[in-house]
Image (cartoon, rainbow, N blue to C red):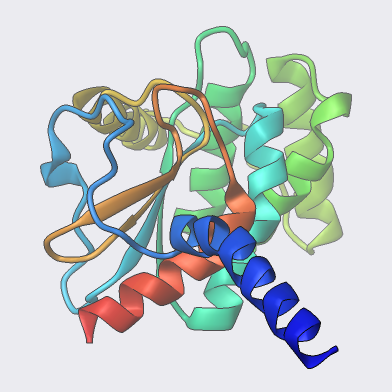
Length: 214
């Protein structure tokens, strides 16, 4: 019986080994088509960061979003979020502008909650008018009033466009693109050229990166 149990334990370890290795931070991925990887650096003062390029109308982004938040909660990793609205999604550029309004004019924390709620309401938003109405109702629920003109001088739109250009410089091909970065290495969890997206691996990869950065 002991021999049987020992053999079983060895088999289980061998079977689980590829999964564990995949979840750990192993450095530069080989499956991406990234170009200017100077984009993939943690902000000043951080050894590790999670960089996310997302589209508010992307179902895969909505699926990955809770895993990103959970990684921040569990590890305290710095989250760097960029808007990458796809041309095929007619309202998502405007949605990003709405999020920037809340972020710049009210608070980043509230903007984060707005993004979460937009992801949860994707199926009810089909147009620019829909996202404006959603934003107006959302602001009202949070004790704020939607201004008559959200972005009068185009500053917010320029911020979103700057994110979009940064993503193009990196050669973002899929949303979400989620990359865990240290000062010298990176690992893509979502956004590789094979189209794989495994957000459930984010926490393990972040923890691996943090251990390596120490």
